[in-house]
Amino acid sequence: MPGWSPMDVRTRNNIVVTGREDGPIVLLAHGFGCDQNLWRLVTPILAEQFRVVLFDYVGSGKSDVTAWRPQRYSTLDGYTKDVLEICRQLDLRDVVFVGHSVSAMVGVLATIAEPRRFAKLILVTPSPRYIDDGDYRGGFSHADIDELLESLESNYLGWSATMAPVIMGNPDRPELGKELENAFCQTDPAIARVFARTTFLADNRADLAKVSVPTLAIECAQDVVAPREVGRYVRDQIPGCQLVTMAATGHCPQLSAPQATAKAIASFV
Image 1 (cartoon, rainbow, N blue to C red):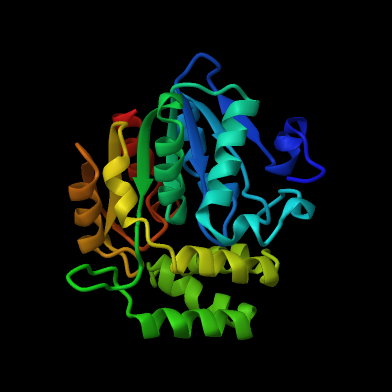
Image 2 (image 1 turned 90 degrees about the horizontal axis):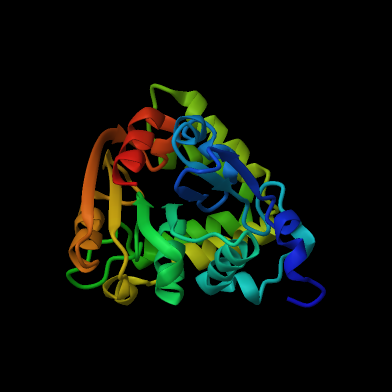
């Protein structure tokens, strides 16, 4: 990236390291419209056993937004480069990558690119393709995604207020949907528009079979964004992949069911 050196990666991605220095390394990657703060209920639990590394993608949270370039972040390759640069800068090895939502596919791409750097891969509510295609069921039609993106691009704050509670689920706990809405609203709408297209139009189904590290997929019993059919598809496509279905609702179990999410992660690590 023009004007950036490896020494700037810690600042660029707002890297935070916590937990046991001698523990296995767990790298937590957030999803679209979020930042590392959404891991805050899981992090203290994991930190008792592991060295936990958190970061914000460029354009999210407290990252350096001046480093954001639409060309780099218009595909998941740009986010994958962020992850690999973080690993190289911190000299992280035997990394357990934990990716939420779209970051699950970033983790897939990162482990394919540098499999020797990663010990394990954990995919939290993953989806390699959100759009239905023939026998594949991603949960959305082309028209659904077109409407979603059009709404997001025309009125991002309105879209955030409408969609956050749907994505979060748990209508009996409205504070969770509000927190996700607030996270969305902190993102620059111009950046969010690019990230949304990168997320919802991606198709990483063909990449799943290339994963060579031990993998766990974590799904929720009810999730409108990544339905159960998607979890089974991911399990069947990644060699040796394990699938855990939590008795949780919504697309963000690190907020709605942090204890169960942390337990599933720790057990696999």
